[in-house]
Image 1 (tube, one colour):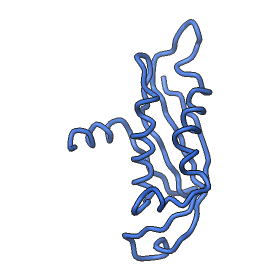
Image 2 (cartoon, helix red, strand yellow; image 1 turned 60 degrees about the horizontal axis):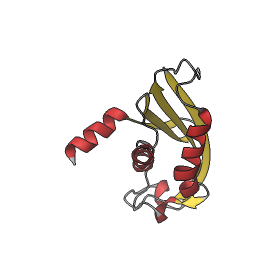
Image 3 (cartoon, helix red, strand yellow; image 1 turned 45 degrees about the vertical axis):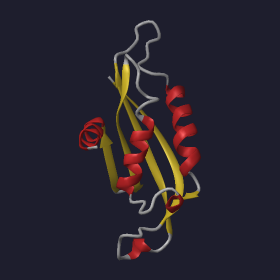
Image 4 (cartoon, one colour; image 1 turned 180 degrees about the horizontal axis):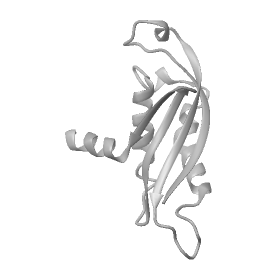
Length: 128
């Protein structure tokens, strides 16, 4: 079973390794979807408490990104780089014996999205 929790944050960035409109400082309203897979606990009726996902994302992701300049955290904050960081940061605290972080989806605009999954993470850890 997959549980999805959605978030929104605003941030500015400029792409330092890109030539075009996005090399100038600009902002986005980002949409983040967090997908946790697991088995439903029959006693609670839940895979994971939505509140646990909310508190975790707020504490370790949104507190660092919302209303910030992403260039203060990343040299070249493309949506791909930010999505990878979000997944790697959320992976340990959203993992237990009964559930795990399956993927995240980060949307920079209503039509531009990045999905980063546990398979992407596995390939990354194999290379490094």
